[in-house]
Image (tube, rainbow over all chains, first blue to last red; front, side, top):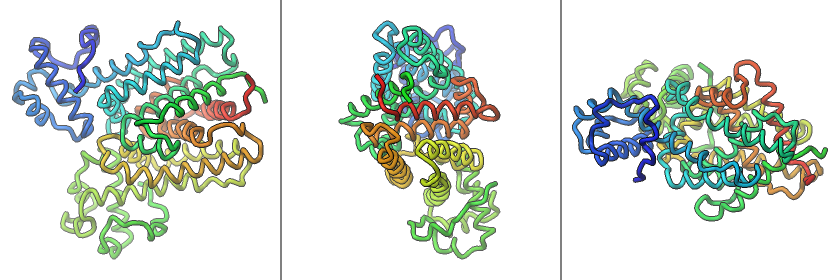
Length: 230
Length: 230
């Protein structure tokens, strides 16, 4: 099980856990969080059971409810952790590291790296995007997608100033297209369905020969951003 | 509730229902199918209950099990219907209707049309792609994605012969990229999360002003397929 990076960075955010949860040992906290991540990633939120999570974390259901008011609050705490990791993909990218094409290549590689390192977090993200979890959609989409969208806008604006890409492209819709390509590539490392789909479409396997896929996706984006020639 | 088109076309496929199901009235069949679609789309497979579906369809659980051996078989019957509709997006596209760019525009518009007309089918597709349903992945991905991938290959091969697109592009990975863009656009009409995400990225709403999004996605793809100019 992966450990959660930088839990303390979240201090200023809305908390979905009770104060009692803060007071328990780091080890106990981590055990609850890890078991919850496993349960939610494996079964999806709707089919997950807070009693099962308590049992696996070796705490009583009474203790569980003294830390989290509901399954929903436990889930939102976990989603905060997931989103924190997904955001760190973006924060791991330094805008000074080369031009827009270098940055997009870094982003694509970082997406793959995080999807492989933290599969459960991406699996929970996939679950959050389904309609069965629509009650969380509004809150959660703004939390994660705004950061991503703004980051792309920053990258594209800068590249336009540097005259590296067509200045007539629509920044916002092009950001949407690029993120869609990167996200679907990331999903290919997240669920068996998408893994199989990438293999069916490209003939390449996420386990070994994906270098060619990265190169061709980058070529596709690069041409889409370039000045028109027709 | 939408009615199921062309159930009879499926006769040569693997059936997941028992013969008794074939013998009941069309009306009763449709009621069971419709209630199952609603339940699976709303809650996801893992959290759906076959007893609830039987109750809503006004049949006894005994009757339900005389038609379907398990919740899994009922679900696979429903997925067959969903995939049948998703496939019909592809089959609605005539390869003789204009060049590759006209075809891709038709495909994008058809994806939107079907996503709006049959929201539950796309919601079930989204559910199937999550890791919580990995036990179905291998079987289901081949069923749908192979048809899609082959269709793209056909379109791209023909466009290369017509010298409308760069003959040096990698057919397979480019098919993957194009389908990823169309799929994510379609998802934006399928779940509240993706709906909100498209709005955050593009500023446009799936409910009204999406014409500009279609135009820009097409421009993005067109440039990506064109001959290099750098």
